Length: 215
Ligand code: AMP
Image (cartoon, rainbow, N blue to C red; front, side, top):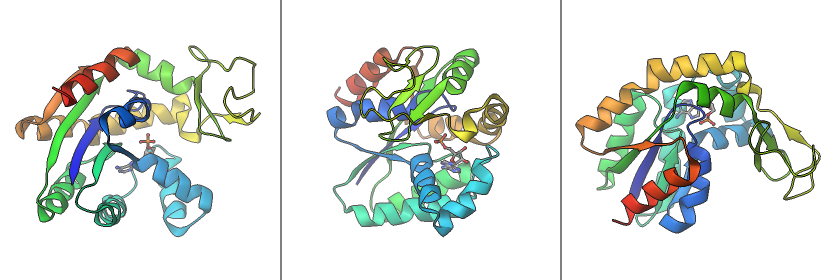
C-alpha cells in the first residue's frame, strides 16, 4: 500500500496534474471531491449530506470523509498505489489517515504542495467550465472548446460551471483552505515528506513531480 498526496489551494491544479501523470507514475487518482460529486449525482445519503456543505464551500465533516477513505483503502489490497487529491484537508483527517495507514504497515510517502499565486487561483477557478458528458475541463480565459459551447471530446453541448466555482463561493473556499488546510503544510513538513512545487505552469509542475517520483 503506497500513498502520496497532492496538497494545495482550490485551483492549484491538483486534479488536472493527477489525471495527467497517473499513468506515467502508476498511481490511482483518488479525488474525494469527485467521489462526493458522484454521490450527489446519484442522490445517495452520502451525497445528500455532503451537498449542504459543498454548496457553501465548506468542508464536509471529517468523520464522513475518513470513513469514505477508510473503506476505499481497505478494499484496495496491499499492493494498491494511491495519489490523493483533496484529501486530507484537516489535521484531524491527516492524523486518522496516518493511523489507518500505520495499521496496514504503511505511511504517506510524499506530499507535493502545489504553490500558485492567489490571482491565478481565482482566474483558474472562476473561469473553469466542465463538460457534463465526459468531464473534460475547459477555461473561458485559457482553454475554450474549439467550437463554442461544444465539447471537443464527446460533442456534448452541456458545458457547465461547478456551483462552487463562482467568485463568492471561491472566496469562502480559499478562506477555508487558509484556516483549515494550510496547517497541513507544517504537519507534513515536520514529518519530512513535504515537497514544494511551483505550480504556475502545468507542464513544468507535472514534470517536476514525475522526476521526483522517478529519482
Ligand atoms: P474539491 O473538488 O477537492 O475542490 O472539493 C470540493 C468540495 O468537496 C470541497 O469544497 C468540500 O466541500 C468537499 N471535500 C472534498 N474533499 C474533502 C475533504 N477531504 N474534507 C472535507 N471536505 C471535502
